[in-house]
Length: 350
Ligand SMILES: NC(=O)c1ccc[n+]([C@@H]2O[C@H](COP(=O)([O-])OP(=O)(O)OC[C@H]3O[C@@H](n4cnc5c(N)ncnc54)[C@H](O)[C@@H]3O)[C@@H](O)[C@H]2O)c1
Image: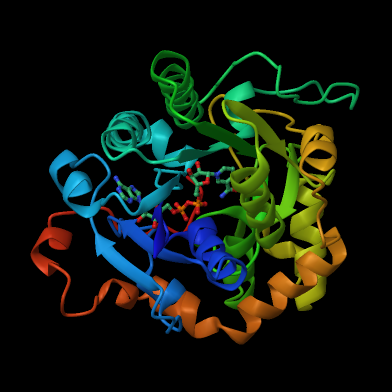
């Protein structure tokens, strides 16, 4: 059977993608290759019983493990694996450079070695920097690179390597760049799950600066459908910006979720702004809409309602992260390797 090698599939977006791919691509087996860092959560896929799904515990920086895990049957590699939290990259960029840049190069080399037909790199609008607040400018596929955080810089570096593999070696590559995702199973260090988790416990909700930063939000399943479309129909070497035309101020999101949960806005606590905090992201998604015939299925209202309901119904999922229990892994995994990792989840934005 043909195989898709998904890296970082135990994280937020990767796990949503694997669920979608198992439904939509009956002709493929899906291999999830994940290092289960603090952001990788086995709970995210523990209800998947499809025999076409398998898991390999491995680090994309580990060339031997990557090469041992790939076979000629792998047609497509989709690279979700990344260190993804901007605040952590400001504290220390080392892991971001290793995983996001070096890890991507290892996968590109492996793709060529095994004759993989298509390599899909999951990237971010943050590689293009920040936009003015006046809503006249949008990120297009031709916007210049201008990453402002170590995270964004590492993702831009990865994009350059993907482009170089296409130009130099003719590897069939696709780059997708998305804005802020929201939805079920997002690690509760990111804005929306953090605020739901804190609000449910009547804990303060930290909001950076004046709360007027603008992000372009997309429901995670809409993002995954766009990735699937780009994977299937995208032009080799192409870049696809994915957005739902949904700009929101951080403070408006916080207030509307507190209202929906029936919690007091007095929980909001403005904290010192993030260093180098980008003011506005907004994506022009005309290319995916026209070339790939994609459009989001969820509006901000329906997507947010689904998201809030999921966290309300799955408080055990959040509690297992808060207690650290989600790291109690199935026996077959090397617990010793995992104990060597020092990172533990944090629950505030500082
Ligand atoms: N979350 C967003 O809003 C957003 C927006 C645009 C782009 N992206 C990109 O989408 C991808 C997925 O984001 P996410 O929010 O699901 O991230 P996440 O942090 O929830 O998950 C990352 C996953 O990658 C795994 N991983 C990390 N380092 C690894 C390594 N060295 N080897 C193997 N696996 C490793 C983790 O264990 C985890 O399962 C990332 O590349 C990110 O840059 C995310």
